[in-house]
Image (cartoon, rainbow, N blue to C red; front, side, top):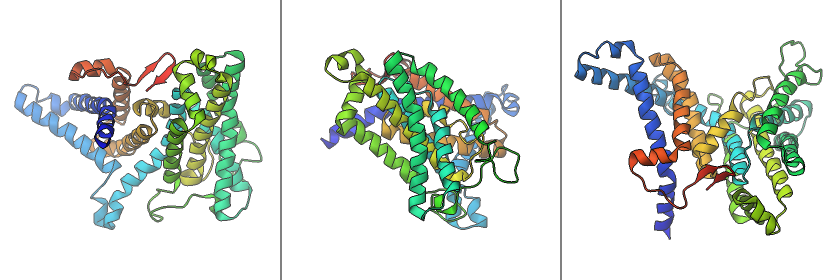
Length: 391
């Protein structure tokens, strides 16, 4: 049994791993060929290859130093300060895990949740308001703020499922439009007297109270906070929901074939609404964690690109909870390390975006990757179909 489990796990990570390696290889070529010093040696093949390899290698070394461990930080501080880049990677990955799970769960039910961005925003709004407006005991305050964000985002997400169930409106169009609404809503909200910080005219809310902040895990010098445990618990919850519960079976049944599920007596409208409500809650929890864990104050850019990156993370993770966690950590590392790569080597930060795009390209084109590496197609291979993510 253990051997079969390991074999399945190996098959599951083979395609994403090869896609990741292929993307980094191509990015290395792009880095090398975009360097004028490398191109100046093209007349000497051996020197050209050595220079190209050194340029790409230095860029990836800087990426590692900016995302995992930087030995230079240990010289002026203690050894553990060298892991500051890793802490930043985890801080960035934490909301990405939650928003990625939001998109992945929707895939399992045959839905495309493009609205994680808007749901993230509403989660941040709810958590921020409870965080700075009320004065509660330490643990209770954190829980209340997180639940407020989840509830608000769940309503926002559930409305999409309800509209699709009752009117047949496509969830992609609905969620895209609701992202716009959420984006403008937060701009308006931050200008109201309830949210605008006293004495400020720029759109920023008061900081949440100390009792509503997630505790730091490694002291004041590192930003890593308890939100990572919340994200991992959410991933475990999604796995349990999908594999161990009746409602999870219904989600997967509707995702596989909605008409057959309806014939079997499953309420498709209920599944659509419940799925989007839970997806909204997950993305909203990501927004709450961002406010309570690292930002501490609601602002117009609180969501960044987390909601949109979540789509990429869910694709890379093949809509599996564990895969989504690893994909989010990878993207967190790329975001954190990209800045160091740019400052240390002069490689544009856009190269990180190129890497992300290539990874997704190869993940979305499994036949192409299998052709390159001469892989056999498995009967149980996962793929994105017209009905959602099937895997």
